[in-house]
Length: 337
Ligand SMILES: *[C@@H]1O[C@H](CO)[C@@H](O)[C@H](O)[C@H]1NC(C)=O
Image (cartoon, rainbow, N blue to C red; front, side):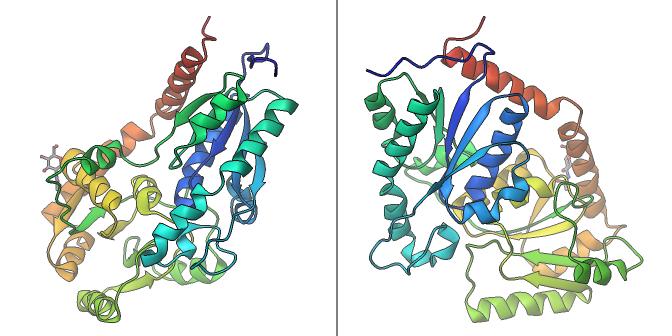
């Protein structure tokens, strides 16, 4: 019988993270891991091997990557490790890929438990993590950790739900604070414009594939605006959840062309709750409006955004959440003094 899990004397946890195999999921798990590691908790991050190439620049603390060998499933190309590498019509097969990691995750957890205690595992998507932790019998607590807006999950069980995709535009501020520096080519090109806010940027995330005529229509819409624009067909990150949230802290006017259900719900929150976004019918007309510094609607969006940016970037706002979260984890593990 293995020794029962205990929290080390310093009251620090060892936490295993097992996100869904897409950058859009792994990155928020890693951001949380960074916050936890910064508070002296130890993190083992269970991800496909490719993530070890793609994520290290976001690993700000000594979180340990534990590589997973992603199994092959009939019907998918060889070597696929992330959902963004799978064409949308085959995504159900990718769900099978993720589901087939049961034995591997069990072996990794077992080895880790033998080496040093694991107190908690954060996971998403698969249903068998609780069963594994119970089998290990050392009191590992499991957390089903959802990176999407909870409204998406609540909405998905409404029988009469009706997703109504639309186009939205919102005003954003400032720059690329936490990101990597711009590549020279882009820094030079953007640096050539004297006035801030004079270029329109459009990106689709890695999961949207437009038909040729849809894409042409969109780009023709941009041409109608008469402003400089560039359109990214395959940006480096996965799901727009992150782009939407991070862009709240940025300084750009953003157009969202919605596709997946969580994008739709996230945007509803930005439109109806935070009021930093407007839904639109005509792409070119709306972009012209929000790019016009004197337009009433554009000014109102900007004002609302400034308010939210102030709240979100207040010192202690984020760390307060993390500290309370850790307190709750300690309660869950019965280690609150
Ligand atoms: C900005 O917020 C105010 C107050 O909540 C709201 O009345 C207004 O409609 C918002 N502006 C836009 C463009 O949504």
